[in-house]
Length: 341
Image (cartoon, rainbow, N blue to C red; front, side, top):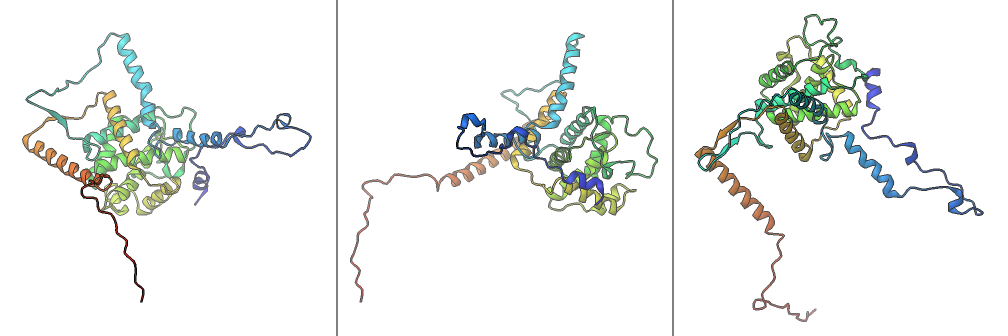
């Protein structure tokens, strides 16, 4: 196991209780009243509210908690808008298409079927903000994710590999290569980001230039096995990354799972939150999803899907609906004497 894993598995994602939240020891004294003792016991509801604070630190578990990548991107977005305002430069707006009576523009990205290319771009942008706006003090760097100790290629790692932040295009190329070679879906990219932020929260580490490739690789490896029915095997990733061994992939997956405390569940509400936050991130960075005019064939498909959903929910509501019986058709139960022989 090694000390790198044991020291992080013991850390819990739960927020540690403060000292004042613990009950003080109470010594019964018949001569002193409750006010004289100064023993202020917390109400049970007050103690339970402390656990609600955990949602702020676990966005990958709770749908009401704010995603980490969106909060880290706000600083850069505000600075960019402030700079444009000071220099009197209008923001570079992408030419938007607006619907009319004759033409309706829709993008082909939905929460159930996201656009693969633009979803990967948004995920790469979220990882970029994670690396750029990481904790300046620096957190613990685990050996399993250190690219110097576990290189992904045989080429020599530069001595300043942990000093320069990767560009968004470099992150996008790395993720796109894995998704294209393994034929992964856009939903898998969203789950990858969920696992990445869950790892950073549970293990209390930061993603930095020295470990971002192996963290992203481990998240993609796990997300593909959980999400896709026909998962890619570890040996298949060795065909994509020629210089990595199967033993290294197995160890990466094992330690990644242990750091997640084997919590690989992604609720639908959390998945939807990450999808819409990625869209908000794209809009804030002028990365719009492509709009296409609504064709006749697609309109018929949308109408058919809408009709099917309407019939489905109508059937679900039918057993729960209570109807009042008419007095004309009301029949009372008649009791007849039972003859026991």
